[in-house]
Amino acid sequence: MKQNIYDNNKFFQQYQAIRVRENNYNNLLEQPNFFTLIPSLKDKVVLDIGCGMGDFAAYCISQGAKHVTGIDISFNMIGNAKERYIHECLTFEQVAFEDMTVPNGSIDFVSSSLAFHYIADFQLLIKKISTALCEEGILLFSINHPIVAANKGKESWVTDQEGNLLHYAVDNYQDEGLRTQNWLVDNVMMYHRTMSTILNTLIESGLQIEKIIEPIPTNEAVCNLPSLNKEFRRPSFLIVRAKKV
Image (cartoon, rainbow, N blue to C red; front, side, top):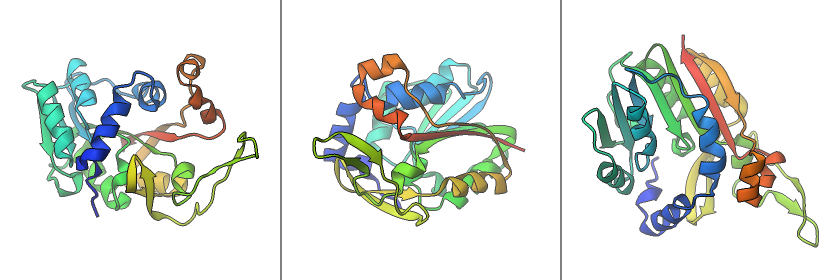
């Protein structure tokens, strides 16, 4: 099941408002850590899954990539990407990766930032990525952290009567599958998997895990966005780099 939430105009307008802020979780926490794991892109063929408005795909071109394809199921996202970035070695397509035909062993680097938790069949996704990657090709992705996604949309922070945070409660962790939550709008669909499912799926698909990051904010980031203090108590994101072996 594919939910194209980014073509919900109410959602997309609010999402754009968040992303244009200099101080947000993507800019201060997820992206800085994601970028530390990017391999050399010189003369590489790149596929960016869930490319959004094309920023990362364009970055790959700036780093000397041979060709970059950015894909997203959202008309709004791809429309913005095509308007913002034009280059002879850069292609944007409105398509889901599950529906895309990719020649075996044709991709050097597959990237995806905060998109895989929208995809229902994780095993099929990773198997297809592994098949598309060339020998020693790299997969780099970030997702919502499993302990954040587990709780079936219920409030996880437990507070005292004054509203001070006591602890973070994790529940329903082993019950994998669909989650719906209110994020900008009601009934946003995402999928929860345990850490063992995520990592074992990579291993079973012939991908060797090279690095895992559960991002921690810098002191400067916390000064710019105080709510990041919560990240010292539980991570929001999981970032994984793996290699085709």
